[in-house]
Length: 127
Image (cartoon, rainbow, N blue to C red; front, side, top):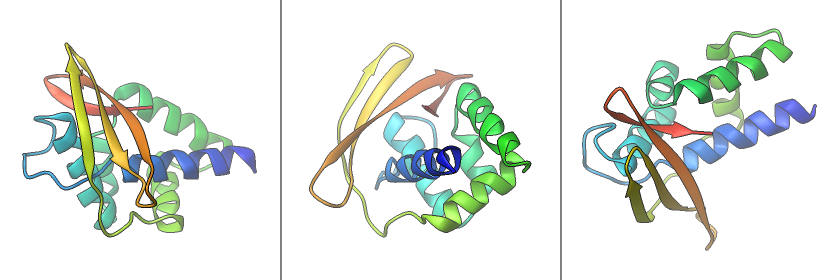
């Protein structure tokens, strides 16, 4: 199903956003990515959701409903089907007010740009 493939790709891309940073989760966009990555590695759905923006969670809920699943089950299944790679790196974190981008290595020589927004004082992944 196209929706399932789209969600799996979306969750995989979010996992790719998680890279080696030593900051506490959410204090920078890179730290938020690291928090997401650590949660994905530990299969911690609540941890993954904690660094997703409200809009992203809303989109995930819509995807989950199309498959008659809870958003937690949907995220867990997507993470299980495409687990995060062992290592990552980031570059070019750019912050502009309450919006930011971080380039993330795809592990195959390419880079993907991810968007973050600041919600309630914390950086969150935005779809």
